[in-house]
Every structure is written in C-alpha cells, then in structure tokens.
Image (cartoon, rainbow over all chains, first blue to last red; front, side, top):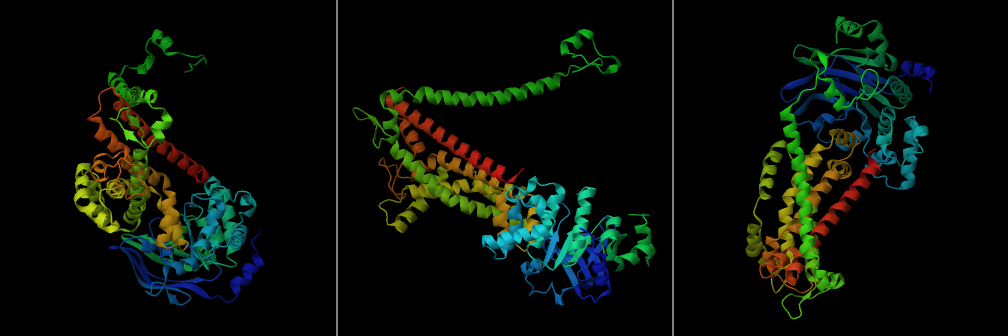
Length: 271
Length: 318
C-alpha cells in the first residue's frame, strides 16, 4: 500500500472544489461557547487535520459536519455550515440523508456487538438494501477498501468484538464506506491503537483520500504532519474555547507557521 | 506461600515461628473475621431456606402420587377433591395458568419494553425523572387492590366487549396481571437500556440510522440480557400472582378452551382449596403437589431464559 505520490502531487496542483465549508460558525452548549466564529473551506479529496490542545473544541468542530452535536441537549449552532452549497443546519435538511453522505469514525473502535458481516451491512440495510447478494457485494468491497478483507474474509460470521483493536477500527471504517459517503470524519481514530495499527490506518487514510474528503481530529502532531494536506489549529484561551488560530496547507503550518501560538504548540512548548 | 528458600510455608509453620520481624507479622483482626463469618452465614441461610422449601413441598406433595398416578394427576381434567372416591386432575388449573400468563405476557412485554425504550432513549430527562418513580410506585399497589379494580372496572368492560356471560375470565385476570408486571418490566428494562454504552448509538446515528432503527436494531438487541431478565421477573410475577386471579379469573373448574372462559389458575386453586383441606389428607397432598409443579414451571422458565441468553451471548460477545 504505497502512497501514490505522483497522484498526490497532481491532486494538490489540480483544481480543487470545496465541498465542506463553514462561515462564521459559533457553537454553544447551553451558555458555554465551544466554537467561535470559525470559517473554513475543506478541500475535496484531501485530508484536513484539526489539531489543538484538549478541550479546544476539535471534536465539536468535527461533529458540526454531520450534526452529531444535535444529540446533545442544549447544543445550538449559529452561522453557516455548507455541504455542496447547502446549509446543513437548514430546517429542510434531513439529518439521516446528511449522515449518509458524511460518515464518521470514532475515537474508540465501536463495532456493534454483531458479526463482522452484519456490522458492515448495517448501514446499507438501513438505507433499503436488503438483497443478500447485493449486501455480500457491498460488504466485500467495503472490507477490501478498508484493507481488512484478507484478515476478515474467513471471519465474516464471527463476532466483530473478537477482532483486534486495529482491525475493529478498520471495520468501523468499512462500515462507513459501505454507506458510500462523500466525506469521512475521523475523531482521533488512532488514539486507542498501537503504533503498528496506527500506521495501517494512516496508510488506509491516504488511500481513501483519493476518493473521499477526509477530516480528521488528532492529538498527535506527527500524525497530522504525516497524513494531512491541510491543517487547522484550534486553541483554547482563558475561557475562550474554540478559537481558530491558523488554517492552511499542512506543509506551511508545520514548517512556517504564521502565528506564534501555532509554532509554540507544534514545537511542543505547550499543550 | 513460598518463603525465601522456595519451600512451602504453611500457616502452622508461621505460627510456630512466631511473628515476623519488623512489624509485618500477621495480625488477628476480629472485626474482619466477624463480618466475613456473617456474610458466609447469610449466604448459607438462603440456600438452606430454599432447600427447606423444596424438601417441604416434596414431603407433603409427592405422596399424592401413591393415590393418583402422575399421568392422571397432570393430565386428568377432573378435580373432585371431596367426591368418593376423590379425583385429582390438575389440567384445568394448568391450562388456566397458561392462558392467564400468555395474555399477561402478550400485553406487558411489548408495552413494557416500548415504554422502557421511550423513557431511556426518547424522553427528555425531566420526563424520565418524573415518570419512572411513578411507575415504580405502581409496582407497590397491593394485589388485592388490583383485584378490586379488575372486579369493578375491567370485568364489566371485558364482558360487554366480548359478549360474555361473565366478565370474570382468564382474559380479565391476564390484563390485570399485565398491569402488575408492567412496572417491573419497564423499570428493569429501562435500567438495562441505559446501561448500554452510548458508543453503539452514536455509531448507528452516524451511519444515518433513524431513532427508531437505532432503538430496534442496536439498543434493544444490545441490552437483551437485561430486558430478558426484566421479562422473566414480570412473567414470574404473573405466574405466581394469586390474589388478583382468585378474585377476577372466574374460578371455574372446567378445562378452559379460550382465554375468555372463566378459569382457576394453579395459584388460585391452592389458595381456595387449602382452607378446606384436612392436614395430611389427599386434597392437602394434591395442593402441595400443585405448588411443587408451579415451582418446577418457574424454575424451567428461568433455566430456558438462561440458556437463550447464554446462546445469544456466545453468538455476539467474545
């Protein structure tokens, strides 16, 4: 699974459409403001990393894009979050349809307590695919895409919980891919994994970035530097969580940050 | 335990060697010993009482099979304890218990689980915090009061709705029993649903599942062991409940064909018969044998539920 640098290069120089963007977004949990005036354009078919210290609002920002914050009572969004030019917080937007197009992988691998097959087939089944042959095709393809097929093809009927942590996380990625999303959100997908499993997920992410728009939250600076094309640095100032300090190509953020605070954070002076 | 040289040191050796130096010697802690002893005693007491109950039921009940062979006892349809000669066939009671429990379960399980799912997954916190204690209070209504309610309110309704000669029927009893097992089923299922880690729900929602799909395909299967326990507790109450069925089931001695027939479940048969039975007589023995059968039924129900759960767990969990 080599990273196709040629393709990457072409992609970075070619025209990029912006699928996801936010404009002056503020997020409140009750009276607590978790995000402040965030404006971002997330490039298509690339990996955008959201970095920053704990509690700065990284996950909140990520969960803005598939409206997972809706599940929290008292969460309120002010501002614009667009997917292909449509404000996803508009009343006319169906959350179920949105989440079909914007999938999510969580911090802790959370496969359902079902068989490997049923885990991957869960999404397609919910969206009206019931024919077994069709589901088998989807499961096979998704597991192959998630680089889990070789390890899991003989375990399709076994409990997903019997897989290793890294395999479980790839299964969760396959489960998302089975729904055929356009955007994949990843909330610290490797923080519960060992270095080898982490590397495999990172390789997988690079592969997937050819076809999908990926947004990843990570604590790990090296990871952000390794995998992402764009990076957004969020910070938490004294009672001011969720301030976007800097956003730009990862190479610039890491080698030539414009803001002193970014530099301090990346070089490990705080955080 | 091994000492420095690697040889086995028993407690006796150590006692003989005297306290270890440096204040590390074993101390005699009477409070610990006392509490430990008390816990063991309490555990033993439960087992002894349970075994005692079984022994009593068997001692008093089994001799009836010297008079009436088991085949006639269990499958006989005639219960004439005071005829000469008396016949003891418990089929009418057995079938009555079956109908009443079936009606109660058919109502209380779907309604109870749905209500639990509403409270755990849908209701805002404030609703849940008001409704749940109220439901738990319902569980404390004495069964004789439930019997009254069945007698005064429900039985006329059942009578006119199904055009029956009497509203006192297995159906009426079953409905009342379902109301009595509902609080247990709701309360225990709700606890089980809320104990399920939120990760699963989040994953389902993130895959575009609706709330209903998440409840039906993730939350309920995920907490099935707790829900099954809740159902068993509820069904157990329905099978064992006596006063309410005695009051509203109708008390007929014929084998009930339909749930709308008047009938006498096993518990009611024991309660109504024991007052007239001569101690040690055939009727007395027969009633104890019914009690023993009830005990075996509930035990079997529990064992089956255990097996089902075990299989379910093996299928999914590691």
